[in-house]
Length: 576
Image (tube, rainbow, N blue to C red; front, side, top):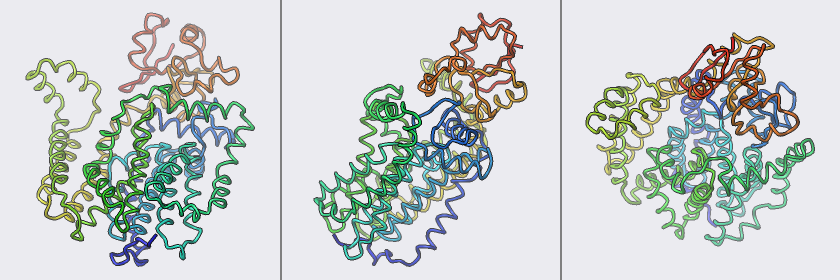
């Protein structure tokens, strides 16, 4: 297999450090700015911040606990990184979010490395700029999720394979192959067996379609597997020895049953990820069909194996999760680097005078930006707009009122700023459509960069306050003493994080169900009748619940509850 780094188009060694430093300094801003300015969002951020906090408190990095009961849904890599960050920077929102944000930034840099080795400098810079300014990617990196860590590890693993595969055998050193096995091992520690299932499946289909089976002889399987096992086995053995119930729950329940059933209550239709990809990778997702079809058409051309591999990378993961019975928006994050590289190479070919024009895609993007701009402007005047819609279309009155009641509160200046940015972007893209692809690239990247800078400051504050339990937790700390019992209806891990204490959980325990059945946990997981009995007793009780839940309980609460604090979604009530 020939070396396909296109040295004639900037694929040489010059400029590596300069490019990486440029990307790091420029793109670090949207990834890390204001990380500590917003409260943790429940349930995900509260969960993935509380588990490492409890690890540090208990001095145990082997057995994860959540609300002080065993929690085996995920492996520990994210917990370890977050625990290290909390140890270094304190128990703060910034420290809790920093590892995920750095994983997102690292993924951008690894994408540059892959693109530089496969296609050349310009494609690498375009791909990194696209990925690092994609609002859906950046915003999800700023939330504490295992998926961004998995994306970083898989990008290293999958990228290392194709980079090593494209090298001449005479230059076939072991380091890049070892990076592949290291990335796979870390991916397993990030999110379980999927960290090896994806690389194995993607590489298999690539070898099958390309007929490059001789690569198996170059992959250093023995030493690579030893490295993989050295990374993954120690924790799985240690946690299984300490907790014999772990293997069955983790490997059967969390992998097989999650994929084949709706046990986690996350069922969505098979086409769910199509609009998700369009929304989270906008505006670049519009160019995905053309980029992947180009990669498939050129798979037999000289150097087309790289595009074929990136196509398989994205397709296997996308189809796997589309088939799965458990679907969440962040699941398809690992396909973003591959798609960014394919789209970037298509733009690069156009800039070199190769390939088809992107006029249709540009017109579609411009039209969508116009719609988004008008919608953002209208959102600033939502009461007036909703009243007009109800008057013009009376049948829409119910849905419109429901939307207004649940819509996040966004200020008029924020809507004007975001809407104006979309409209300006639309005009410039439509003006450049089909004539100046470089200008369109610059406009889309620059506007997206500004967007991801503005959103955390202008929009996310109101959303975070509505979804976070921080204000309620502060009230719990101020009102409760050592003997005060704190109860939440359903898991609300932000309460534990901000108060630093264990809480009682009643109602549907969701993710705590497994832990609640380990040992005698009845005192900490009372049913609703027990909570009602405690409410009328001598102990001071503070209860966090949703507004509609209070309405159903009111006839049974004697004495009448006193509302001590509230958010848009939750109330904190007291029995005295």
